[in-house]
Length: 331
Image 1 (cartoon, rainbow, N blue to C red):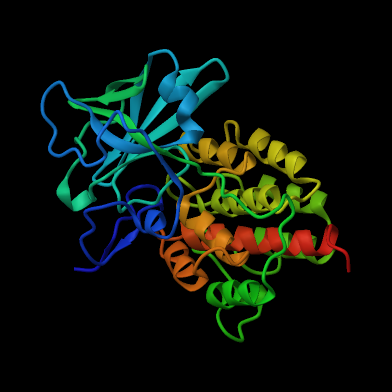
Image 2 (cartoon, rainbow, N blue to C red; image 1 turned 90 degrees about the vertical axis):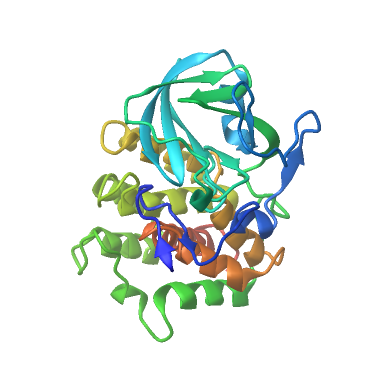
């Protein structure tokens, strides 16, 4: 049966077949760094053993640091999210199945959700993180490999393939459909809506006006990662990875606004975006746009991520591309 897991806050992935290895983004070329002391092919869990995973380098400090108490933020078949207090404030780490979106804050298991590798634990349940391991319920996870959620691009300000950009826009907006007609479920549409304001800021090449729309988009929409946040995460990461001179200021502004205005998971993902750390699906599209990988399947995978998250992130990326073209490229 064709299903879409929407219970992970919009970050489930369309799963049309069993996948007993790593997820689609990994097969598209997400770099991994094997650690030979642990077997990535370890089988069923037994008491006292760790389940191997591919861990994002974005959470390396948390995973390798001192052991800290954590609690379960959300537990669903495709993901368990933990919240942990750090000296910088609360942070979030996820344990993800291989068919979940490859988020930059995740430890990705080598089994899909239909194999039920994750324990079912209630929100608020205790967990522990650090010393190289993550423990929740009877599940202990350790890194058998690391993957880098910041895509390696040719230069600090990479040139995108014009045909690739057209392909992304066509897939997102539809052939012959004006950008002004594009809407996202959960976000107000029309000329007075936040997406219209964002488009207007881009037309004027006004990064400050684009940042002001963040006050209207942060926390807007349902789910653990509201669509408004996903748009801003796409814009922020796009500006950072495409080398826009105002990227750091934009990212700091967005993450500052997120405090107290959206979910813990969304705040954590926005912080990762401000550092250029993105999902494997988003990274695969960026690599395709510079000619490092197949673009069409990468776009298709991103757009089918969650109920709205993938499309919102793609909209944010297109917005970042437009801002870069209008404000920092030679004309």
